[in-house]
Image 1 (cartoon, one colour):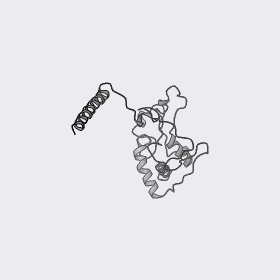
Image 2: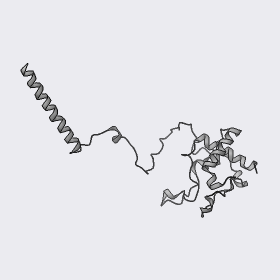
Image 3: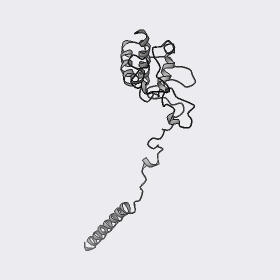
Image 4: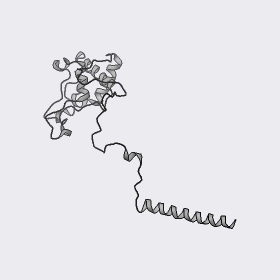
Length: 183
């Protein structure tokens, strides 16, 4: 029994010593313990995300296939779609294109090089729904600005694919079609 108590004291002392060494190793020596978050692929703040894997489809379904022409409008232009599109237009588009889509929004006065398009004009209304969808999705950019790629959208329309879902973009297209009829 006495031997058992002595072994217990020795093991307790070794455990305290080991715990002390572990605390010193972690706090003083700063041993970098590897965690799975450190060894997976990722990107830093303000860094462009990795490209989408080939042949992958978004959760909401494919918006369009590059190289296959303009997509067809799958959303019927009913009252619900137009009303939803009007709300989204007021949030995302009216600041530049104006309340009625005539290119006279609050920010239009500050855009010196390229003014927002008059969405009620004959030329713009003659575009297909797919062309409008691609413009809303990808924006209008300046491909000649290769020196500063982050400034390619300065003064022109930015892409709204991250702001609006596929369905919401089609709702905005349906609303834009109703602008000409309301004048």
